[in-house]
Amino acid sequence: MKAYIFLETKPATSLKVVERIKNRVKEVVQADAIYGRYDAVIVIEAPNLESMNEILYKVIERDPNIIHTETSLVLESV
Image 1 (tube, rainbow, N blue to C red):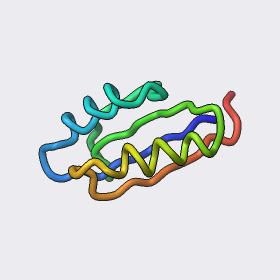
Image 2 (cartoon, helix red, strand yellow; image 1 turned 45 degrees about the vertical axis):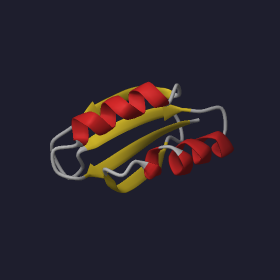
Image 3 (cartoon, rainbow, N blue to C red; image 1 turned 180 degrees about the vertical axis):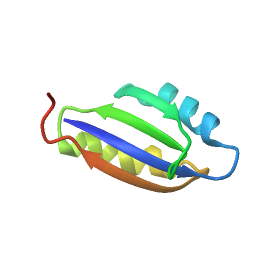
């Protein structure tokens, strides 16, 4: 199961957040600080929805510099 997680962070913290998540979550495939509506995007591959839920709610959303997240689950890869 693959997901794109878009993050809105506190000002000037997106690089720190991306590095911290990359180092703490082994399921991270890619993590980038970006410009635009969101401050960062994280790509995660987990074995199932339960694992994805654990990563999102127990690790990522507990970061004090993250204001908002939006998750898009991949239906099919081409």
